[in-house]
Image (cartoon, rainbow, N blue to C red; front, side, top):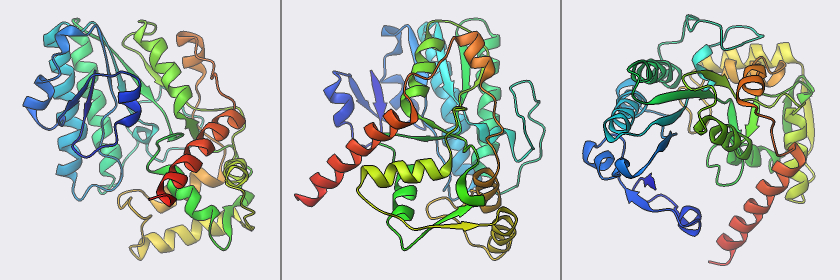
Length: 307
């Protein structure tokens, strides 16, 4: 059973035989219509990502929506839940970053996503502490894969451009993870492993920004021109651009400085705890993940061309 917003593409879920319920986590009646009493487990992944017009708009989905869904699960007798959070809750503190670090690093006032995801985790921990439903929190970094409507379109737009800028040459380990590998971690958590715990779910196998671009370009039969930008220069430029009010398209509250820093430094997030406690070992390699993603892109672009 899945809750979906009006107008959302649900063909994939329908093909899986999933029972679909139209509604919103901001609407109490929509959550109640899920009839969660028929379920033993819940995955809460709905969120307002970067791009909210105000803190209140982000809070309504990420905090109030989380409370509404998890309380509904608790009252319906659901015994296990997984809450999808984000490494954004750590802010811009330097690595290495493990789950033991307290969430005390100051966040920018305009960073609505990180602030509300921190608050949502407090909601999740509070409901878990009541002892009626076990809530496990997963913190992935940037996700990519089939049906991705955010990161993959941004990367494709760059690959199709005149040149692809790579801070520091794009050779540092980039904090991104394939959605299929996150799904694997979700499944392990739903079995009750590490119930109540918090886990970083991030690829530490050597995924670099350059390999992501090269892999996507190969899948789309493109030959991008890479331009290396010294890391220090890229970070300075991002700071100036941010001061001028420039933002990433569709992500008005995502810091340019943070984005460039993560693209030019090694992935600071450790997934050691997930591997040890959950038994998580990413099933898909980078090459397999990009192949599956590329097949979806080609299918989607082909269907658009045929219209």
